[in-house]
Image (cartoon, rainbow over all chains, first blue to last red):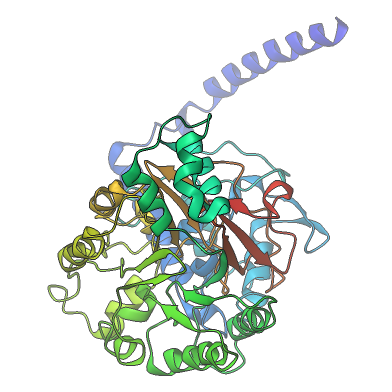
Amino acid sequence: MRGLKTLALLGAGSVLGLGISFIFNTAEARKPFTEEDLKLMNEELIALVKKGDELWHSPKLGKNGLTCANCHPDAANTNPHTFPKFQDNVGKVATLREMINWCIERPLEGKALPEDSEEMKALEAYAIYMYRGYTLRPGDNTRAYPPVRVESGPGYP
Amino acid sequence: MRGISRRKFLKVSAKAGVAAFTAGAVSPLLGVVNVTEAKTTKRSKVTPFRFVVIGDAHLYEMPNHRFDKTFERAINDIINMRPKPDFVLFIGDLAQFGKVKELEKGKRYLDRLKKAGIPYRIIPGEHDWYLDMGKTWKEMFGRPYWSFDHKGVHFIGMNSILVRDYWTARNMSPWERMLAIAELECHICGLWGVREEQLEWLEKDVKNLSPDTPIVIFTHSPLWDYYPRWNFQTEDAPQIREILSKFEKVIAIHGHVHQVVYNKTGNMVHIGNLATAWPWPYPPVELPFPKIRMLRVDPGDIYDGVGFASTFIDDTFLGIMKYHTWADLIPEDIKDGVPL
């Protein structure tokens, strides 16, 4: 009961706080993005996804001719919404980027990418985009999830 | 007479040999059997045997490639099988990019079967085909569709990977054409099928066969709509199924999906073969028979998620397809085989 009261007080306090900050920061308050803004920002994202798609299907990441898409068409079985999670093949909690590098180094027999590289960002963006709409399930090792269902075309706008 | 009672009748007739007609006619389970049916049953009696299906080797040109190792291991396992299988069927995608050197490498492995006294038959996959439109493949292996009879079963192989021209209008080189279709989720390739010439051939091929003839058909892709996005389909499969609908039972075996999958349509049972190269994930659709599937794969083990299959056909044309794997891939209840 006491916990609930505290929560209620905190809630009221934060509403009040927001109100006050809104009054004091009127000059800096942001308007919602316009349709045009949103369109431009989405185009930037799709450009990165497209770059990721190309890399996903490129043998240049590895040395044996294989690509990410050999085993992960449409980024299937990458399960980006389940990261971070314990990976039994590396024996620790890993991020999606670490697992992308794991695949590049082992099945593709290539050289790991710097985790903050543009190429890594693009690969990650593509995988996540192909799982858009999924609920985040960090740590979920129970099953493999399929990517979004695609009727035709590249699978993104 | 359909389904189980038909199967029971065949069993009775096989055991009773020349007395088949009499046994069937007086069987209290089956009632009266007409003379014509008893005769055809006798004619199409199957002598039990075993054959192997292997495929999706996806061999690359470079030496000592990981896919050479898995394919070679499968070939060795088949050579060492006792009793020897009657024959091996290669179900498409011997090469990765249809290159002469890739196909030559594949043929060298397959010819080892022949040297060991195991004949093989082969149909093409899209990876074998779209660099030179099947020229090298046909020079090496002959006609891409065929039929033969073996121990009472009529076997059919067809080339199911023929797409419409996506390259001329785009001014693509043969290499670009090949690279495009080498992607499972090719954005521009469209659906594939066997097309008119093969449909006409199939119709003629089965025209004079009686409905109780046991039929096994091999195609690279499934003869049902599984996930068209990845060409887990054959566009004119409905026509193929229609032509084969007169038969009591048809076993359809396909590659391309690199996974354990099973379905039934009308008089047909369909089953997918594993690759020796790598496993494909399950697509974003419900499996028609969710218990017939493969387990989680360890991507760090090149021998996991891959393999081949052997099928035993008994005297009633009941098939048992067993997946041969080198890792813990097959669920317990289908470890001994999937009834077909």
